[in-house]
Length: 193
Image (cartoon, rainbow, N blue to C red):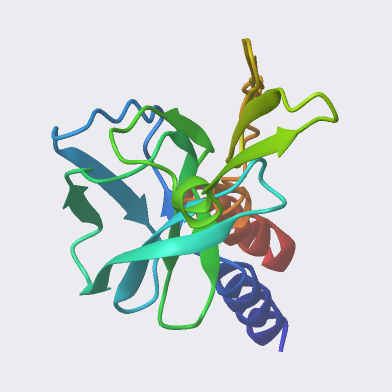
């Protein structure tokens, strides 16, 4: 009976395991291969690239691989905009885990900037009471991060966003390390003797 309880407790601790990403650093460079590694996944995994300003606002942007069973995947980044990214590894039990959030300098233009860009030009001529023509050119460019307006002089306003230090979201190792299973076994043996 006591052995059954210990066995159930061991399986419960093992059941809390989710895939743990084992990479310690994420220095990705455009066009250079990067190998992502993980442990403790149940069955094949799906590897996704997610992006967001912080760990609470991550959204998937690209599925990199499905059905991976080797515990590693090599990814060569290309066509990504600069920003904060992370990897999400989801096993066949549906348990996801995230890598650290890492900054990436890419060569592509952000889709949000190109999607909201617009250009408006207006030229008007007006005659005053003295029949002197008055002309003005107004041109405005609006995008997600900058605004430019031109009348007779040019003024450009740019906004920069500071980068935040990523938080460690790799919580999968908390319950899933082999050492925890060894301690559970030792505790069960001590309890039964």
